[in-house]
Every structure is written in structure tokens, then in C-alpha cells.
Image (cartoon, rainbow over all chains, first blue to last red; front, side, top):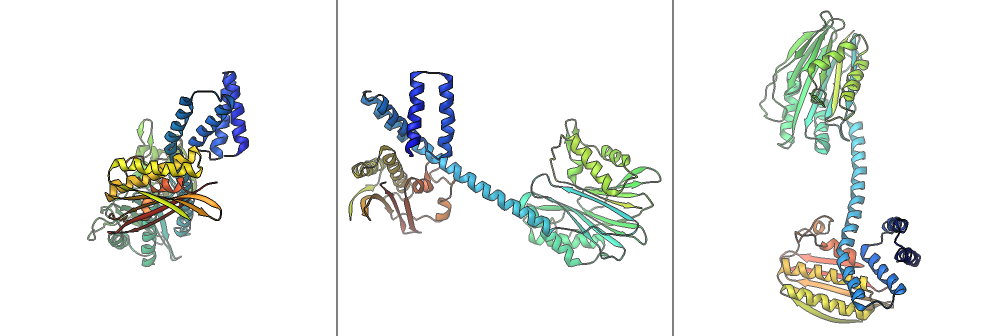
Length: 333
Length: 133
């Protein structure tokens, strides 16, 4: 124990013993912070206290000194608990750094490039609720007039979800074709997920492929949130549903696929349940609210629309995202 | 140079005897009250582990003199089942005795040096030293 600390303690204690003011207590409490910063354990504080009292009042009865020794004994485990806490905090800090690194790796690894097709305007926004994003978007396009997109939501969050996504990504890469049809893409990824992933982890996925020459969008779904179709000529909204089990449930799962042809100004809005299952004080956000938000900006570029939907939904939820939020818009222009 | 004496651990009361032995030696060596309390807490923890997990064993206390430094060495030896995963019991937050015991990481913190050797089915030998400053 550094001597200047002992001297300072004795002085502060002496002030208080002479005059029991709030001011003197306050000084003492500030001093205790310094003790903590210098890693001085509770048992050492009591030992220091005992020494200070001995200096000031040497003629106290033995019972007092014995009681301090007893108190020192009592404090040893508290001191250990404090040290353990400090070491756990340090460990936590290290884990946090590791998680940040992992999140960066995930971001780099899972990067996807927005396709650029004549006549198709794409908007994309994906915001994780926590560090690691459990939503996954992957575009497949090789400049031949097709633009495939996978919107996936890994049920289960954090690290395991991120690892699972890498698997989906490599599965998609292995298909290596923007012409691949949704039902085939979904069955291939389903088999990969089913083989490699823990039973408790499931993935929902929506896969859509847009053929620019025919302005035709073909889509399939593995237990995923239905997409929204906006028709510019009627101003109406529809849901794009397709039957199919979540990925990873059964190797024999079969996936439907359907097609829609898009006219000028039509939009297909794909999303994860973080968009629809946002909660406000009044309850879940209704689909109508999302329709309305899209409607408000329907003449703007796709990116402006997704941003608007996000901003407004975030505002309604007091800036507290409950779940990862992902929105993709294909807009025929 | 070393002086030694030991206590067999068979019942919970032997833990107290081991503490007493450790305290006497620590006091004799000139350790202050706080360090005495730390040394006896370490002995308690080690003796308790023997009592709870090995059933029986021995706590040995030695006085050490090395390079002009004086110290105390606690040896906790048993022929119990051994510790299957030493790394785990040395982790913070892993409490073996189910209570809020200091555990082996606690013993390591209370002392200056800590060595553990354990063989499954043969037993455990822990040596912990504290030097007088």
C-alpha cells in the first residue's frame, strides 16, 4: 500500500472523527474512488483504517483491534469478488473487440453488389438491431439481363446466424447463375442448410429473379414474409406469396414459384419480419402503414422509398429497432 | 532451506487445523494481518476442495528461503479423482463448490505463485507460494 495513500486516509479520517460534517464524508467518498482506481482491496482499506486509528487513538481497548482483524478476515472474499469482477470486465471488453472484428469480417464477407439493369431501379436498406445482422441479402447478376435477389432471415441471432449466412452465400455462389429459378435455388440452399446447420436454427428466404427483357419477376419463398406488389396503374397493393417450408427443416421440401409481369412504375417490395413486426406503443405495425409509406414516395427513386419507410418506422418505434430491418425494392422504370 | 509440517484433511474440522498451522507459520515469518488472512483463505479453499472432492488428502506448509527472500509454500495433495478440465476450473466465474467460494482462481490471486498438477484417477497436487515483501 503506497504510503501517501495511508497518510491521506488518516488525514481525511481524522477530519471526520473531529467533525462529522457532510463535507468531510463527501471528501472520504471521493477518496474511495481513488482507492478503487488504484486497485486497493477492501481488506487493505480496513487494515489501513486500523493503522490510522492506532496512530490517532492508541489507547483503545484490545477488543477494537481484534474486531478490525476479524473484519479484515471478513473482507478477503469481497476483495476476491472485486478482482474477479475486474478480470471479467476485461474479458468482456476483449469479447466486444472480437465481436466488432467478427462483425467487420461479416460485412466484408457478405458484401453484395447491386445489379445494374436497364429499366430496373433497385433500393436496398439493411439495418441490424444489434451488432451482427441476422438478415441477409444477396444479389446474383451477370450483366445478361437478369437480376436475382435472395432476402433471408436467419432465425437465431448473433454469431451462429452469421456463420449460417456465410454458408448461404457460398451456396448461392456455387449456383453461379443469375438465370437460376427460385424453386431450384431454394431447394439447393435448403439441402445445404439442412445438412450443415444445427436443428435449432432455421432460415426463411425469399428468392426473386427478374428478367429484364420480359419485365417478368419470378419468385419463390421458404417460409418467408410475403413480398408486396405495387401496381402503378391502379395504385393497389398485393401480396406475393409462395408456399414452401423454412430452409433446413426437411431435405425433401418442395418450393413453389410464381411470376408477375411488371409495368412501368410497378414495384416489388421484399422485406424481413423486422419491417412488419416492429412494435409501436399501439401494437404491431400494420401492413397498411407500410403501404401508405410507400405510396407517399411512389414516384421517387427506389432508394429514397426504402429510406423513407425505414425513417418513418423507426420514428414510430422511438428509434428502438426490435429486430434486424431489411427492405429491398425492385422498381420498374 | 525449508521447514515443513502438515495436516491430514479428513473432516471439515481439519480445514480449521490447516488454517491454524498456516497462520502460525505466516505470523512467524512476519506476514501482516491482511496477508495472513489471504494465506489462510487460500488454505481454506484448498483444504475444502480436498474435503469436498477428494474425500481425503493433506495440506503441507513450508517455510521458504530463496535468494534472501522469505516465503510460505502451501502444498495441497490428494489421491482423489483428479480434475477433468483444469482450464475450466481456473476460469473466472466457474465456481466449483456451488457457493461463492474463491475457487482456484481465487487461490491464485491470493498467492504469488500457483502450480497445479492433476492426473485423472490419480489425484491432484497444488503448490501455492506467497513471498514476504
